[in-house]
Image (cartoon, rainbow, N blue to C red; front, top):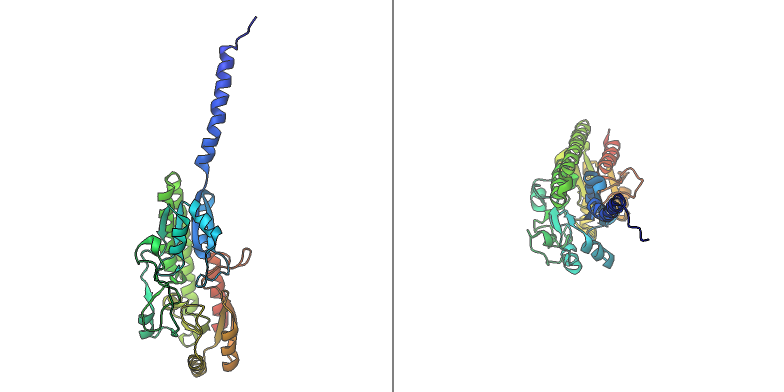
Length: 339
């Protein structure tokens, strides 16, 4: 005699089959948003705002130099699979347009610096904020200005001291960091509407942290006499910081880490450091300390330690995130500049 399953058994097995079929769908729905950030500071901002809802790959990692970076085939693969690309803009990522084309990237692009008032090197020189040493060009002019997929059309090292190029290091002013955070939060919300309010909420909380730190930095430097707020750094990466917080940065090289000053430019800087009694010189984590240490030897200024300019520290270090980087730089600078 053939026994047929009961109606209850059929329903039970049918329900189980439906639940099993729904598991891959639920897993797919819960998969984190795939994001690629052009360099480590942006990568950290995306992680802070995106949390567990995002998976972040960073192209130029900790202690990496975005000025001299050469993309790899692994980078192209990461970008091909990404749903969102976060870039700095302001002509920073000269190598990025070629990588975007090579990868076939089809996702969204957000320029984190949108809304920032750009600093121009020619205007900064006329206003007396630091120096910009001329050097040979050779920049790649492959991109076309405002197109987000063509950001960085000019080589970061391709400006001479008269061309008025944009300073891309806008993250060195925490007020600009707040703008970055808002742009990133909104881009995540648009790319992943299911978590939109969560991204916006995290973005607001993160921006509040940056605003509180901005007040702390301003208070710390206001307590130091203006005549002592002068330091030498490796390259021209701290212009936004200097204008925001009242510190004069004298870069040994120009905007690009590949640039080296001529003998006459280096001699002029040494003479200025001696004449003005500049109290400290700093090396940067992305650049050789050779020239900065030479200035220190020839002037008697003390080496104040390492500053983080274009990249975060390695994981586990105090400056391995954007907030930590600012707190580290603040501590190194104020300790060196206090009377």
